[in-house]
Length: 118
Image (cartoon, rainbow, N blue to C red; front, top):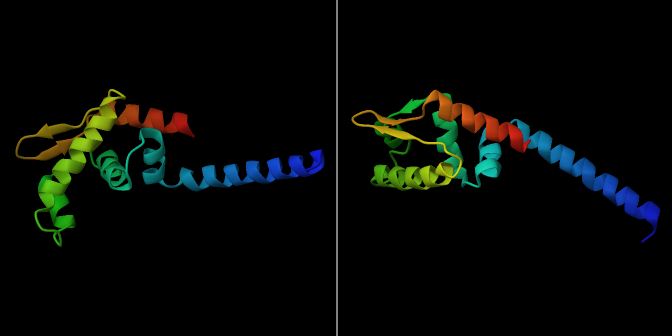
């Protein structure tokens, strides 16, 4: 392959990277997945906690009422998400009788890490 052909291919690949970065800019779930190496379902849960700092288990279960025992699914998903976020000193609290809560400083750390990945 000639040098000119290689340069052209590099330019094409760089443009693809720019487009992919632009596509992830508008998708918080994808940015969370990349920044924290989490699954799509964990990213959706994190996105919800970023928008609403407090989320009840009942709310989560109502969103997935078609599932049998949905709270077990969320307990597992929350456990996995907490484990992955803990590596970044980000914590999600359980508030007895209310559900899950993410404090302002933890939400700010999430934002900072996601911004750094851009």
